[in-house]
Image (cartoon, rainbow, N blue to C red; front, top):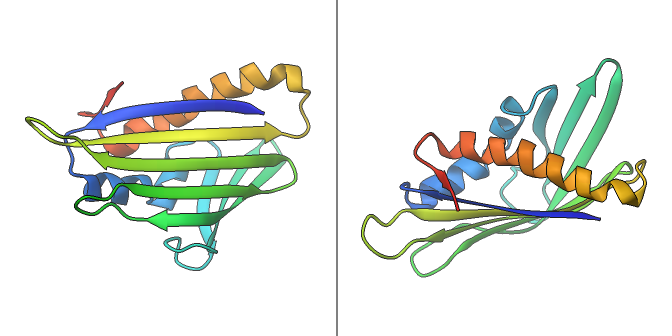
Length: 152
């Protein structure tokens, strides 16, 4: 399985970061050829299902993900959303974590960690899959958090 971790810091408070990184439709607006929709529930509770659908030149890949954990950040508590990938071509999990930063200026730190297996690809391509994930989802995360976010 390919594994990657992305970390961004933002001057936004944790609840604002949380709202942006769990705005599922906005994820699809930032990935070419992809739509992200909530197909079961509200997208805010364990058991809800989100689906990313990517269509390129007649080739269609669905990536349904069930929310396994969803805890919004609050004073003294970090935010966590864990998604379990349920599809045939794409397996694995992703976690989005948001925590408040201490010190002057405050703000938040957002971590996107993912372990992904593209079942139609041989394992020796996992490093390329991880690189692609870092590039695509790093761009998504930076765009969701806005121009004042920065890589860590």
